[in-house]
Amino acid sequence: MTVITNFDLKKREKQIKYERSILRDISIKDLKEKVARCFGSSNLTSSMIMTSGIEEACYDVAIEAFLLGANFSKFNMYGESEQEVKQRCINEDRHLKDTLFHFLLYWGSKESSKNESLLYLCEQFVDEWWNEGFEKANKRRKLKLH
Image 1 (tube, rainbow, N blue to C red):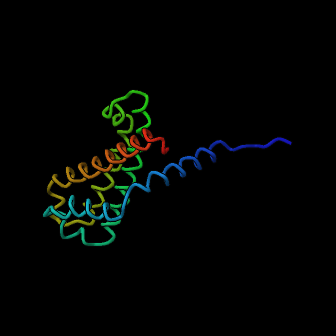
Image 2 (image 1 turned 60 degrees about the vertical axis):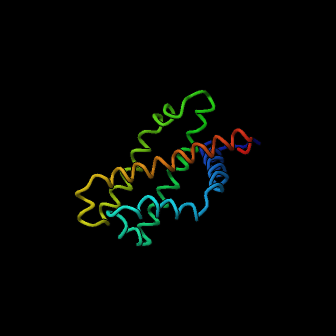
C-alpha cells in the first residue's frame, strides 16, 4: 500500500508550527505598551484607543506585521538586505497599513479623517512591528532555534 501525502497540508502545518514558536517572543505587555505609545500619544487617536475593539484590532495588525517580518526574514539569510526583503512583501505590508488606517478612520473622530498624520502613525506602527519580527527571526535563526 502507498501512502498519499497532501503537501499543502504539510506545508500549512509547518507554517503554523513556525508561527507558534516565533510568537513566543511577543509579550502581551509589550503589545499593550507599544499600542499605547504609538496611538495613545496622538490627539487623533487617544480618545478612541481606549475602546477595546480598536485596541484589539491594533494587536491583530501588530501580530500580522510581526509574522510577516519573521516569515520573510529567511531571505536575509540568503544575502538580501533588509530593504530588499521589505520590497518582497510590499503588497502585504501595504495591505496591513491600509487595513489599520481604514479601520481607525471608520471608528475615529471627524478630525482624524481630515488629517493624514493618522496614516503616518499606522505606517510607523506596522513598520515597527515588521522590523521587530524580522530581527527576532534572524536572532532565532542565528541561535538555531528555528
